Image (cartoon, rainbow, N blue to C red; front, side):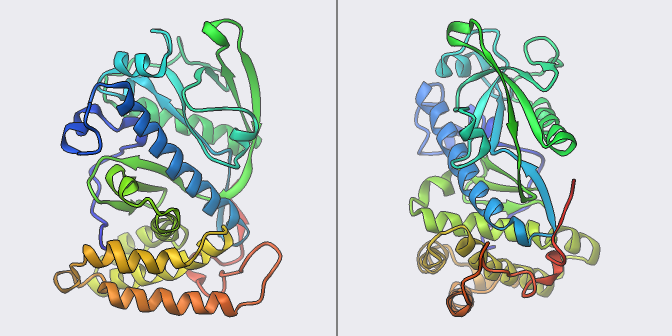
Length: 335
């Protein structure tokens, strides 16, 4: 999409560093509790929208994975871990907390909520078994997410240990997975960016804050999810990123995003409002041959919305797999 740019390494909402707050007007107090909770709120937003889209379209995705709608957050991934602990009200020994819980997910049904201290993930004791990590490092965070994914793939569930009130007692729960289209959803620091890397959908904090309209925001997330579903990154890596080929993937992601939104119950008019608003205001189509201009993109989503409206209602949603065959032939599980 217009705002897509190359990413320079793994970054997540859990690693939205305090140093970035000074450069972003929305984050005016880089060491205040409010700054941490803004990040938590944005993580919850992108995670909830992503869950809703990925879950609703699972019947039609080629690569389907078990998920629970849980994002864990390594406190050490912050530049100021002690400040993060104070903001979330957890004790100095806490290494990991619940970062975000997707609305309508198994994690929410299980009673998990953002900010809860975690003591165990599967058989890993988080206060003693984790390797050391320097503040601001993402590596340990990525390992925790991989640990959860492995348990979900192997068992269809993940076991997590939650601290009790005041660090006493606690609860061990097993959260059962549901099938979703394969993708993670995360907040990043790059201004005005949204990108898909084949495995993740990465949305910048300032873009998430700017798009208050939930249906417009859902279109942005759906567009990036469409890139992952259709295998665009792998295809471009294999065949080369000629401008015409990239432009085709962007058109295709716009089109599929409309169907993903419809299946998830979002107003597809959000795609039109996005083109008339954000895309129009930020359009540099005449400088960028890999992307259509905003009015061409608007015409494309208009046509797709009309096709969705003319399609008969089906149990389980609109089957878009035949219309977008590159990444959606014969839906099958990745377990």
